[in-house]
Length: 147
Image (tube, rainbow, N blue to C red; front, side):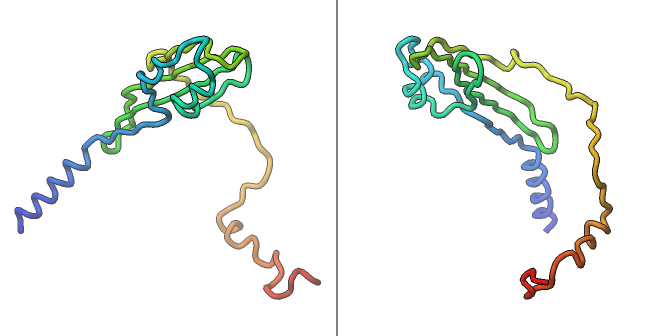
């Protein structure tokens, strides 16, 4: 019995610490990207090769962005970014590819969120008022709102 308990505890410890890999966004297939020929490949061709983009630019030249990230998480620690790629494809006015380029993990940078807060006005209800505040506000069932 002690051997079984030791085995189960060891198994749980080993599996709890094994890394889990996560893929977020679009996995960019380099072989498919190499099929893109500037001034020949159309917007429809790109869509059939790579699928729908992660994002589309709203201003300036029309561009599609394919964004993907691979992370590894061990146990309860913060995820570690293993790879992050962004493919930016710009299009001409006639909807053919003008150019494409990759942005890699090292092109990005961490930003620090602003610590300032915006004051808002309103109620900050307590737990009791949240639980009991609606008692008597509504008509009893069966009255149909008629007074």
